[in-house]
Image: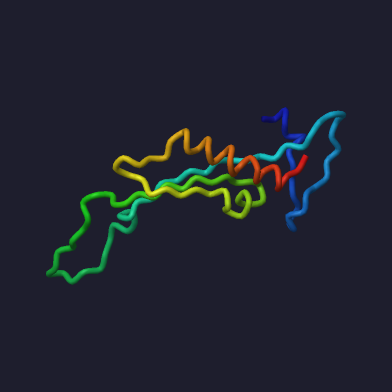
Length: 118
């Protein structure tokens, strides 16, 4: 990673790109990360307010799952979250490598090329 640092794009506080001198035939690099999270409807607080003579009724399962897959750049989400995919998961429905490759090739790469031409 250190070998690429001199070519990594940087931005100032106003999100304007900082121009760097590059060698012959070198192109600037943009650091992109894939962000993947799963949430469940029964996630959350473990403590509740309840009258002392009452028993809490809690769900036993984790509940409906929601999987979120997105791509992040140093200046925010790629294409203002238009690349983001959400999927109700659980049971027989899961986020797969095939779905990620479809998102990458059909959404993320074209959005990256529009946002960072050249």
